[in-house]
Amino acid sequence: MIEARSLPRLFAGAGTRPATLAEHEVTFQPAAARRALLEELEASGLVGRGGAGFPTVRKVQLIKAQRGHKYVVVNAMEGEPAAHKDHRLLSTNPHLVLDGAEMLAQMVGASRIAVCVARDNPTVVNHVERAIHERERRNLRGPAIDLHTPPWRYVAGEESALVHWLDDNESLPQYRPTKPHVLRIGRGAALVDNAETCANVGLIGRYGADWFRALGTAQHPGSTVVSVTGAVTRPSVLEVNLGTPVATILATAGADPDPQAVLLGGFGGAWLRGEDLATPYCNEALATLGLSVGAGIIAVVPRTACGVAEAHRVVRWMAHESARQCGPCAFGLPALADDLAQVLRGGPDAVAAVARLRERCGVIEGRGACRHPDGVVRFVRSSLEVFRRDVDDHLRGAVCAGARSTQHYLTVPALEHEEDLVWE
Image (cartoon, rainbow, N blue to C red; front, side, top):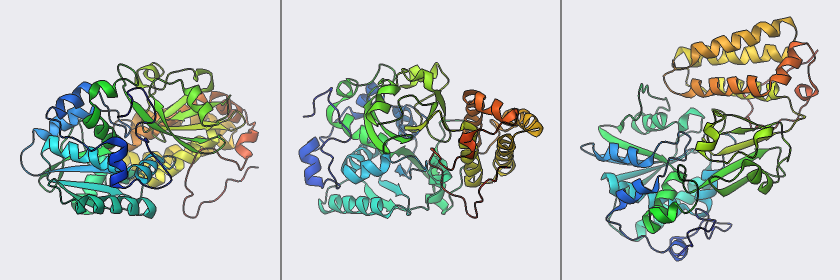
């Protein structure tokens, strides 16, 4: 039995290769059927680890109430370029993720589980395939588990886009004016949770809500997995106790001890100032600063970097990655990227560009078919606020050394036919 207050939990017994089913059951003990599994999940206070932070039990209750055929979808697409936690989980303890998926299927009455891993990540695809085959050889009754490999794109990991792909082979987000909203594969209701959420369900199903709540905070219990990148000794994937100061997490990762800012939650997240690193890493503490844990990404930017240049790279890529099925994505996001490029060039036109950025953010917000443009708006507004000094430098025409540098700190994939900016 794992001690209630010990870490790691999700990475218990993790080695350099995926644990076999037999090794998994030695580490975690075989999963016993809990009659009160739904009640334990509710008492645990588990919120989804995919970004939105929605109470897992509410999603389960919504799908449980639906009639007919049902699915559980494990979202391991990991669309954020800086995220590596699904890769680490499925490369070490894939059976813990599958345990949680089976428990979710038991709770909602699902007959099939769809595990989705991007085809661009063949190593993890292979790990999951082998784990599924191991479970099939046990000949145990339960839901069928299928592996699906959609193409990797940022929006492909959005839950409605993922269900759309499973249903119709198109990675396009679906319009959802309200949440929660029942997503469907054919006529069957689909419960979608990311890999880390499923792994936590696997732990709660074994050890119960009290054990789970022994770590974390009252409002945001448990441990969580964080990908730390940017100005660090080396990118790291860490399991941390929710409520740990951000500065402590950075120190563990060998990060710059005095950064200008850290990006929380990925490209749809926002910036935490370097002066606020004592803030506990949990939603209730971060909410006082307008932030959240989000997708479990911390990207560190040093004081020598230009925040405007980093922001421009992200927004340009996010505009390229949109589904382009509505005006805010097709026209609004490229316009935001163009305005940020104008700010980088500096001079009199940059003043008007900043004004346009603020105006465009107000027009775009809340008008997209999905939440992709809202995330970009959040990121842009936070960048203008936190990197105000860099913005002011560019408005005065003093293009900073950080903007001229070829060293970047946010993990942004290169665009096709990408051209470097030329500074005069």
